[in-house]
Amino acid sequence: MNTNLNKAKDVKNDEFYTQLPDIEHELEHYWEHFKGKVVYCNCDDPSWSQFYEYFSLKFKHLGLKKLITTCYAGRGGSLSGHGACLIYNGEQDENNMPDNGKMEVHPLEGDGDFRSPECVELLKEADIVVTNPPFSLFREFIDQLMRYKKQFLVIGNKNAITYKGIFELIRDNRLWLGYTTPANFVQPDGTFGKLAGLTRWFTNLDTTKRHEIMPLGRIYEGREQDYPKYDNYDAIEVSKTRDIPMDYSGVMGVPITFLDKYCAKQFVILGSNRGINQDPDGVYGRGSHLNGKETFKRLFIQRRNGKL
Image 1 (tube, rainbow, N blue to C red):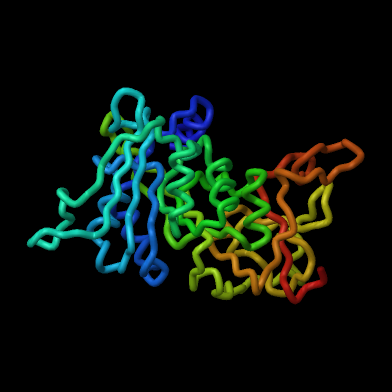
Image 2: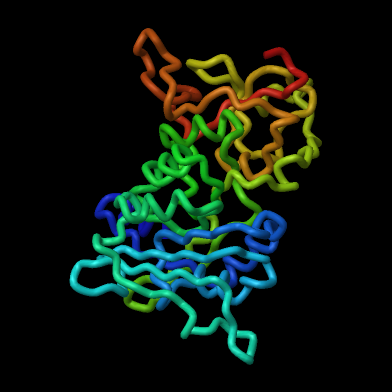
């Protein structure tokens, strides 16, 4: 399935539709954030979007003020090159279900691209954006949300962690990972794609998880052979997050899955081996190397009580 994500990036195939159980499992951690808020799902056709289904059914339970969804003309529900917009204010029928007669559905003048002037105006009205944006436009999508100072909870390829513009937000504690890992996606032909471990929730909504201290149980002293130093960078290699030593105060290279356990009170993120030239003499080039071989993606971290 990693091939599917790589192919999506190469050919701009962004048709991976999030399933309701994955939305429910993540959103249950954020209910207190939504009371009195306008939620905008700006990559979602309400005729099939599970994000729309979740928020319309949970509208009163969450105490929402308004739900807005828009979809791109080329992504399934709209006609004649126009995007579609639905605005729901919480009206319910006698069965306590969303009242379709009270939903404002209308075509947009443009194609419904999240960057279009119409969608930007709707974004300005919103408090929180929740959606699965196009993977190929993830950097641009997050940049727009940050520019308009919006709160958000969105799904992206886990490799976006090291993208330029995304990594800096994570490093500066302006963006972090959510609680769960989305597992199942539906593609346009109706087939299910299992992408467990290959996608993440990205958010700037505060969570209890990001404040939890990671327990450390490994020792560096006397086991230095288990933590080799890089050829071209003054740091030790820690190939698994669970192996971070409790008694090492220097810089460590860890896998990007470290962010699932990252606590900013415990560690500082110094850099990434994907965006920093650590070899000014040009012997190795970019990246971190062990015994002449380049390692996979790494984040460079240091304990807060260590020497910075």
